[in-house]
Image 1 (cartoon, one colour):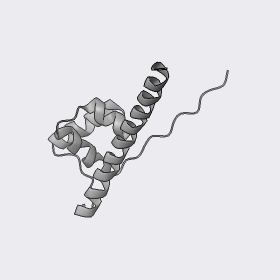
Image 2 (image 1 turned 90 degrees about the vertical axis):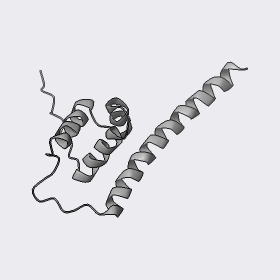
Image 3 (image 1 turned 90 degrees about the horizontal axis):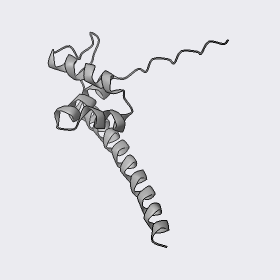
Image 4 (image 1 turned 45 degrees about the vertical axis):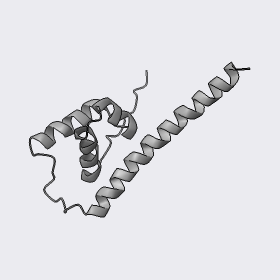
Length: 100
């Protein structure tokens, strides 16, 4: 019997974590943000909890510029829009075949 090779742990930048937490704190559910960004719900929950406790930082963290935050926000928005586009394409194809 062969052993499966363990999956490497995903590494996320501090900016990515902060943007994900900002989306959750902005009113989106953890599950929705997790699906959009491709992050496991439990990981995202841990980031939100760390943020509330003031621990979502790293010792060598540089201040995040407004441009870096905007880039992270735009990446998250792009991922969400792509997902919505894919859903709409599938719905369009379904209704096109159903109406024939």
